[in-house]
Image (cartoon, rainbow, N blue to C red; front, side, top):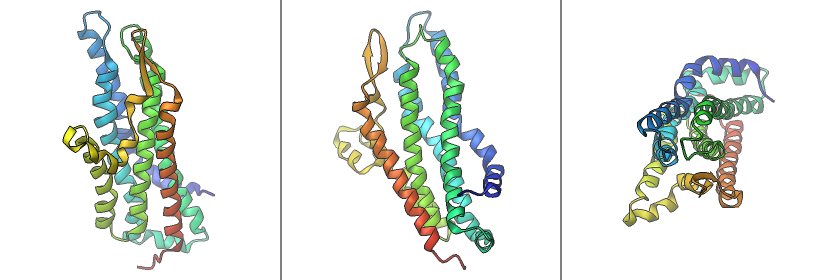
Length: 255
């Protein structure tokens, strides 16, 4: 189903970029929480809203998205343009194995980044639990939502990279659509432009619905309130990845 040599090659060429960009949310959390707590003078601080603005609606999504766009294009259309993919296809490997390996690499890199962000942020959240209004359950749920949003955007960039044979068009579509969705989602916060949220896939991730305020803490809300949106992001991403695999298996790679 997968080829270890392809995994190793993609890991080697993307590891530094992944390491720098995908764990940025954890670095910011480890910076923001101690600074905010120290400046509070010992009084409990509302860190949930700060992280919502800094991590879950901007930096935490935008920076990992750079990795998604670059890596998706490098491992697909980049190899088509250089001609490397024709040598891979000419090998005994089946196209199904090739495309499945590439998809698994992209999804796994995002999922491992999600787990790594939890591991790196758990100590600072736990140590300051009595001083902040954020619980680990809420943070993990929000982080999972951001991972699913990136998963969905990754499927779009991967599809563009698979469909087009020129990187310029792959970037125009694969990077343009996620950026457009993000801009439209931001514009929807303006009352006069609220309707733009209905044409932005980013609106499927509403980080505020996963928590409720109870006993001076933001605790995890009932799954019935946010599971539907999370499932929709997962379903869309999965369908687009499957479509990408079909496109690759049927396209002419003899350039």
